[in-house]
Image 1 (tube, rainbow, N blue to C red):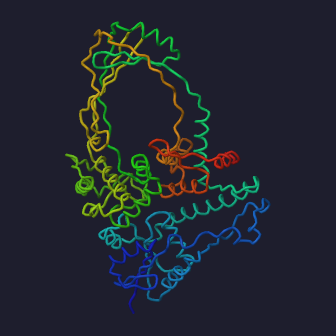
Image 2 (image 1 turned 135 degrees about the vertical axis):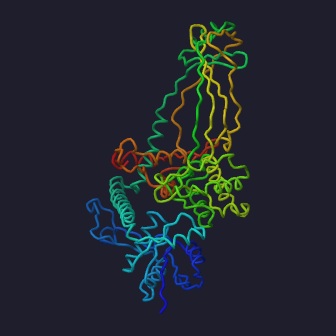
Image 3 (image 1 turned 45 degrees about the horizontal axis):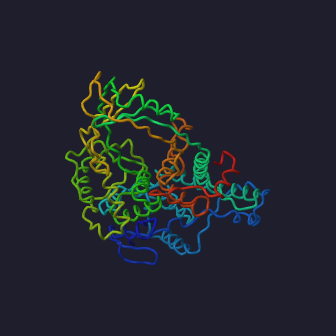
Length: 535
């Protein structure tokens, strides 16, 4: 009798790619077979934690006296449109000729939960191996199957995913019912959604409470450069100073030159890519994740849901080829010297290394890709080129001048080495070089001007800045030894933002070039009534 390994993937498209590499080309009903493998799939989560009324019919009505609802034994529900595939997996898992099951769901916390739920609900007891890969390239898949890991190594990852799932259920079910009953309208409360909404509401309150203040600065023009004084509250005082300095002479009291070095940025993790894609391309976090996921499944990009910004040490030898590939994708030249070591650090890599293009991407006709995928691939490639480049080096000059009894400052910058900034939009900015100045030098003031300014309120959140706030939320309140993950994970933050918009608690408002995220009246009302612990 032939024996088979059963490979369970997260979705059909991934299953087809893996089956093609393994030689499992024969089609069955809900699976593929061949080469000693059976390859099947889930449709994301085949089973979800059951609603409250599955535990007791009385929970079909929302009543305060029934709270809290705390299941003693957790139940799962399989959606009607997914039941057939769950039955297929059950039949495959219990086949006598299947000796081992390979978990080939996405190599992350959620993928672990998807597989284990199906495995456990189908009462499978066969040995489990784990496929853990960061690329869907054929070579990566083959290497992954040559190095399958014991499924038990990921028990803690599964426990983490299960804990997160149950915590979401407990907070969502109980808090939503409590506050909806208290305020006689549906108020959806979530473990991550509500604190994220609270960030938006707090920022809106800060903006509304802000009182702008007018200030004045005096600017002195010299031959070829200008110097500015400090802020003044009274216009009359600024006008008097301008009058005292007009057509007078200013004395240079100090000239300080400092060489500044800016290290190249790290490679992209998912959140940093989503932030840049929002700021530079206007994509939402969800759009960026969708484009990246599609590139991953097309073997053009590595695993998207990563929180690491480095490659592993053993990848250092391939960085030169990667940079050349990325230069081709961007239609530019690679750095004269590729600094491979600065992007490789195994100590800084968790489950997956940073997001980078695959070598296959360099051989792909980019014009055949949808515009969104093409732009994301170029953005990821540009980040690689910046990350492996030399530092940006400039000479900053600050001169202080005395005139009319006040001090004025002039700043200049001379670029010494463009380095990684050669790949940025502002990379070719003109030097703001000051003329040669020396302490004690006297300079005639050619003209004076008083300029009016106003202090500005905090800025509305964009998806870029909200993602950053979610990533660092609670950082100051956590001990140094704690694992800091902020609100949500790189894989879930986009969905949290979309849920806030879909449920009517937040909305996107276009303002000039940016799209703001602002709370709706319903969102403000919800946070107003929630206790601080749920915010």
